[in-house]
Length: 106
Image (cartoon, rainbow, N blue to C red; front, side, top):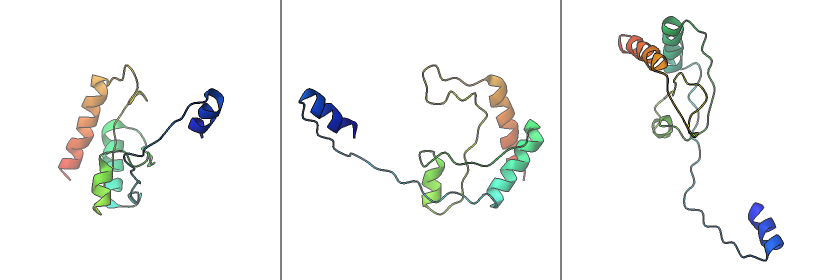
């Protein structure tokens, strides 16, 4: 543990208090209808072959999955999420809106 190493090296006393802990809920089945519909909409609107993957339990979908609702999270990004100088390209937002529109008419 880093705190223990720092204590020994510098003669410090470090106390750690866990303020919160979130355990990721069960992932949405990749064969569920919501995943299949989203993949089809992405393929149609963005002309790309989507893939399903997990990113942990810190997304807004975790709330729904904990309640037993199959949920997915998706967006077109440049891998800058939650970093300094995070940005979103307008062209990606427009393309993603087209995907959402296809899902809305299904």
